[in-house]
Image (cartoon, rainbow, N blue to C red; front, side, top):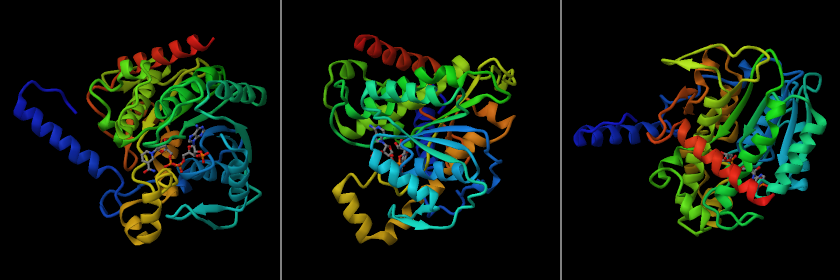
Length: 363
Ligand SMILES: NC(=O)c1ccc[n+]([C@@H]2O[C@H](COP(=O)([O-])OP(=O)(O)OC[C@H]3O[C@@H](n4cnc5c(N)ncnc54)[C@H](OP(=O)(O)O)[C@@H]3O)[C@@H](O)[C@H]2O)c1
């Protein structure tokens, strides 16, 4: 959204941006907004290490399925050992979630398949995140793709360290994980690592300025949807900051090729679309409506496999698109989107610094 001083131009620019945001939210009933990339276009993943937070459900599960089927070593960071074990069993049986998040099975080519490992990680507990990072470092020297995918929406509560649950899980937990995994993300390699952050079009509902640090510091309870928008705004801000700090150098929209071995990271934020996953099932009403009016759910939402396409594409698209994408926000489908005008690397630096301060306070 371009900034303008003319109030009439600003009004129309904002209206146009809102329309574009809605249109690019992946509504199934808009037939001209369709994925134009499929997982069949993914390269062989043997030898690659992929870390996925929240890999036991929704878009994280679908992402794990795509990488596992193509030979990657997939580390699933999940808070529940039971749900992780069930997801691994489903992935090995070729489980694909339908629009009601129920599994339907198709055989997996075991000769091509990779491996699946559960790493316990509760993003709402900084100690658990640190333990997960240590467990990863003990198992692998290099991470090729990190999907900061896990999230909760419009849920109330506090993290173990007392932060508002949504910001604590969606932002603080992920920032800590990324900060601790930097050695594995920046080890020399021929192709830069990628961090794909799953954000949302809902970032538009963040408060003015994006993050209300005073409210966060006061641990104040606010509107649950505003807090969700704030956390997703911060996800995009962090993705921009990571690009500014470790991404390929860009000038006038032209990005240099990250030099092999210098530790660059391609960082992209994505909106997965309106996806029928367990994200909505935490709400009793949404769950009841989904089962009662499944036909309506099918009309307005994509399955998890389709919803995961944006993030997998962002992780797999080849250069020069990949390096041009670093620092960008991808919306539906597989194209650079327009994020809120107040989002930039400086905003992300502030989020990163705030998160680092919280960690310093715990020590
Ligand atoms: N679905 C949509 O329409 C939509 C739209 C825009 C953005 N998104 C974003 O997409 C991402 C994936 O969501 P989804 O739709 O796939 O929802 P989902 O099916 O509910 O999956 C969310 C995943 O996050 C995990 N998670 C939640 N809290 C966690 C914690 N404290 N520690 C570790 N893992 C935790 C969940 O684990 P459990 O199974 O243990 O709960 C689950 O694996 C989220 O970041 C969400 O904000 C979704």
